Length: 140
Image (cartoon, rainbow, N blue to C red; front, side):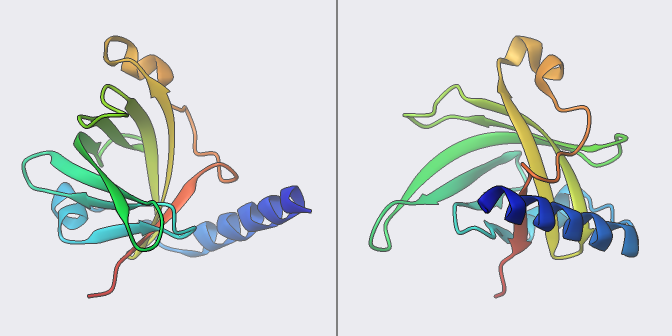
């Protein structure tokens, strides 16, 4: 049942993507907003000095906050967003990912874990619409 729902969601996302004009933001656009995972899993804030933080809900309104550095390459064939975490217990975790904006307010992020010395090897070659995490811009 859940697998069927994921495939249907992926098909809907593909149809939406085909029907939209491509939006290519720059890093400043990411930095202007807080982004939340639509499943309520995490929130991301990017800052102008290539640092940021990811907040993950814990319980009863509490959140774990993880500092990170990031690199955003909007001009590559697939937009790339890499994150390296600086806070325990996930210090040293690196995510090498691809980003696809499906609307000015929404992007998909699909990443793989890897090590800094072999980052490009781990980066996905294409977007996986079933495994990607949708993020939406928080309303102020």
